[in-house]
Image (cartoon, rainbow, N blue to C red; front, side):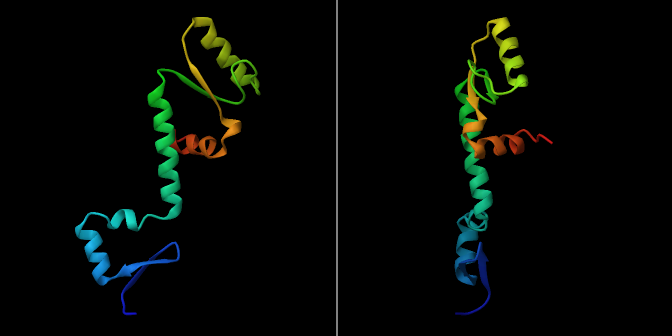
Length: 108
C-alpha cells in the first residue's frame, strides 16, 4: 500500500489514482458520502415519492379511522369537514420515515 489513502466509514475508497479517477468521472462526492448520508438520502427519496403520489397526504399517528393522538384526530376531523380527498401515513409504523420527516421539514 502507498499513501495517500482515503477511507470512508472505515473502508478504503482508494489512493491517489483511484481518487483522481473518481473525481474526473464526477463520482468522488458520492464515494465520500457516509453511510448515514446515503441512508438519509434514501429516506428523503421515499418521502419525496410519497409526496408526489398524492395531492394531499397526512402523516399522522395512527390511521384516519383510528387516530392515536388528539392532534391527529383534530386534523382528520378538519380535513374530513372540508371534504378534501387525502391519503394518510401512520408514522408510528415506520420510524425512519418518522425521523426523516423531521429533517425533511426542518421541524425543530
